[in-house]
Image (tube, rainbow over all chains, first blue to last red; front, side):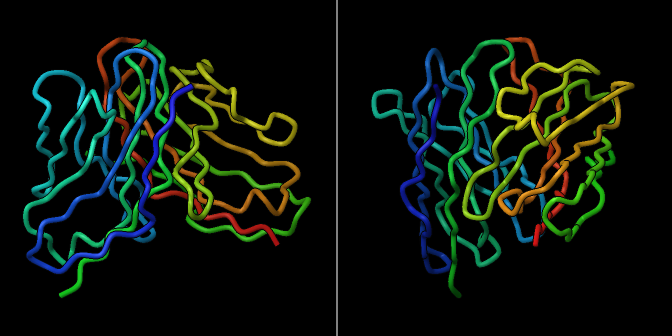
Length: 114
Length: 117
C-alpha cells in the first residue's frame, strides 16, 4: 500500500524568507509525486509534479520541489515566501501502473507573516 | 476553459436523511473521481470512473454510498442514510484519461461541504 507523511501540521515563516514543507512517501514501483495547494473554500490546485527526469521540479507561483529517492522525500520549497502563499498544502503519491490512484498526505498549513 | 463544477456548495442535513451531490467534469475528460476530505485530513478517494464504468470503488462504503455516471459525463454521489461521521467536504475531480503509464493531471472542483447533525 502506498502512503504519504507530512510531519508538520503547520509551518510558520516570515515574508521574504525561504520556506520548506516536508513530505516523505512509500510506494511500490516508481513514484509519481505531486503537490497541491488548497485555499479556504476552494478546491485543490495543482502546483507541480515529479514523474521522471530532473530531481528538481519547478512549478507554479515560484514553488519547486526536490525528489530524493534514497530518502523517499519530495519537499516543497520556495526561495522567498509571500503572505499570499498562506494556505493548506498537500503532498500526494501514486505508482506508475495504469490505474493507480492518488494517495494524499494529511496536509500542512503554511502561514506567512508580514 | 470551464473548470469542474459541483453543486450544492453547502448542505446541512439530519442524520439518517439522504443527500445527493452533483458534478460536471471538464469537457472531454474521460476520468472522474469523487473524494471525501474530512477536516484535518487529506482527500480520500471514494470512487473513480473511466467514462461510465467504475475503475475503483474499493473505499466506497457501499452500504450507504452510491455513485453513478450514466452517460459518461455528469456524475452523482448519494449518501443514504447519512451518519454523523459523513460530515466532510466532497470533492470531484476529472482528468483526460487514466489507464496509461503517463499521468494526466487531476483538476478539482470547489467541493460540497456536508454537515450532518
